[in-house]
Length: 190
Picture 1 (tube, helix red, strand yellow):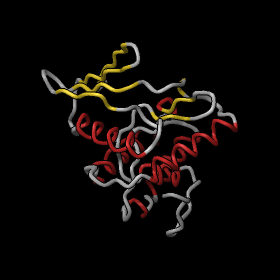
Picture 2 (cartoon, one colour; picture 1 turned 135 degrees about the horizontal axis):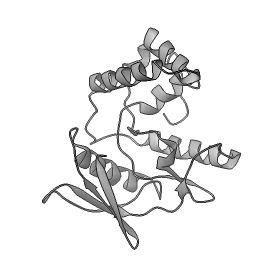
Picture 3 (cartoon, one colour; picture 1 turned 180 degrees about the vertical axis):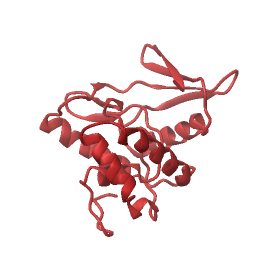
Picture 4 (cartoon, helix red, strand yellow; picture 1 turned 30 degrees about the horizontal axis):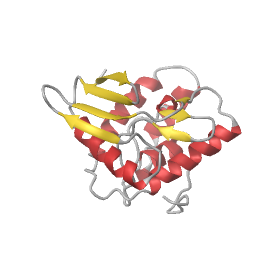
């Protein structure tokens, strides 16, 4: 685990136990940018410190983690949240080293390929024919961990808690599941 979290009233403090890719600074920059550019999508950053180890304090956004089969309302709200996230210009955010992302993805897919079932088949297909679209031309603000539990449902809206940054992560994930447009045709706001 790279961090621990502590709740105190309306705030959350995230204490990092490791930060090999400068995660605290990237997360602070992303929270700052996104909290200013969107209303309520992400926590508002309140303070940061690096003494003795990095920690970030932020507001808590409402909701419960998404998981399992989503309702149509949850799916629509997730789509709206992602479109908002992906539409924020990434000005000022440090780019992610896509070579490292590709290597981590290949390593993860190689492990998944050894399993049985549809996940193994998808991993094998990806490894055997890596999408050429991994060369990012127009970076977007996205997140490095698209785990559904990182999105909170408050009954009406989906919030991201908390975001990280990774260029075009969303487009790669959508292409992996076959839901993204190809050949330069983007989704609205992307």
